[in-house]
Length: 216
Ligand code: SF4
Image (cartoon, rainbow, N blue to C red):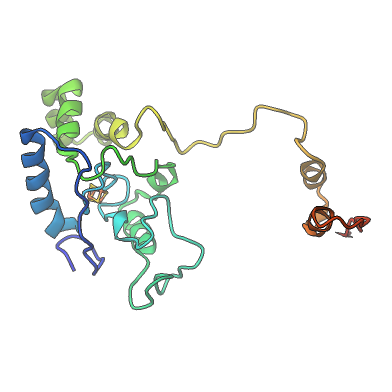
């Protein structure tokens, strides 16, 4: 178990695919030395700690970055029953910290261009953009709203790169008409049973009348 994470497994960190300049390599090494023992950091290069209640989601054996898989339970991980699901632990801590709303944000998959590289350089650049004085001033102020706004201005662009730009909002479809008969029936409140049998039969050259099974 590492310093600040309840995960017991500390899996080996990634290393960059490309040769990085000396300064970035040194920074990455220091980041690995600090965040490895503290958070079990695997150097994914796209840090989500501030989103996931300061528990590294990369402790998940499947590397899931948006919540648990279908097989895990509150008692254990799907792949290793001796190990708790890291996403349940993230939710519990986020709930205690009053930050569970943040978990709704849809996060990007790993950017393999960044994997193995440091994140601190990006944080430093963002703090410079926002203004070091503004950042320090807001973090030490008692104004929670201002603190959260400035924090978000620094960390959102890091966890939500331009090519992804995910958020926690509901995005309704831009069309009104149902895209299929299946969707139309669901919208009309029918209970529809969907099967794939007639497609398979047609592919095998058999003629079959679809029974169109429905439970009324
Ligand atoms: S999210 Fe990525 S960079 Fe952040 S602690 Fe985990 S492995 Fe390290």
